[in-house]
Length: 262
Image 1: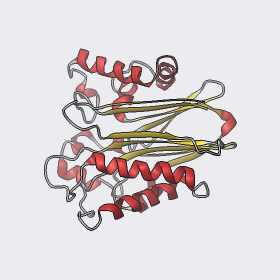
Image 2: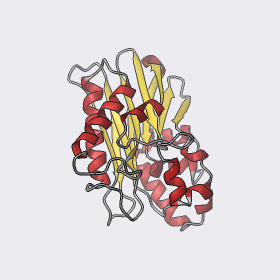
Image 3: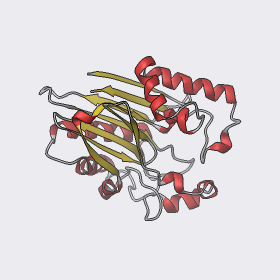
Image 4: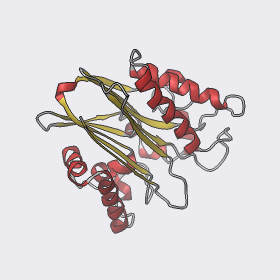
């Protein structure tokens, strides 16, 4: 097995809100990976005393522990329990009913001797490479279906956040786990997988430097940090001229990548 993790803040003066980890249980029978992209709140009250990095660290830690200790639970139940634990950690001090309470996108994968399970919630991505080299992207495209003009309005976006007909993130309600995109593949059919926050998927979906198979090829040959470095270089070179190509654009965004060869 081979694993690589890399992450970098979009702004060195601000905390990195992405979080990533890999776990290999002592049994040696499998493993798990987690990648979270914390949702940066707009200026103003979000009802919480805690930062987004606090939230992603709590949620991520619960996900990686549960994924390897509770092999009897499907990934949706693991996500639900991790959300519940995280909510309980600040329920007494914070207004968890606030629509902008700390939240994150989720990529979760777990593999054993026979299967590879996966879960994606919101706009991070999971790439699955089959034994013949075919690469499939597992995506939750609900946020991408929201018109750009709607996302330009904070009030309109809030109305669609974790709401029917809108898009979903891991926040304080465990029931959101049922909204995730999930699947199971035979272990023999999966050669490698990669989790990417949307700050890293820009190489494909914003700058068009290649497709998902090309992206995985960069990870295999050059490593996770190289993909992030390529994105940063493109961001500097374009100077924002490609901003109209995406629904929401920051000059630089937090980026995280986990690459695993099984």
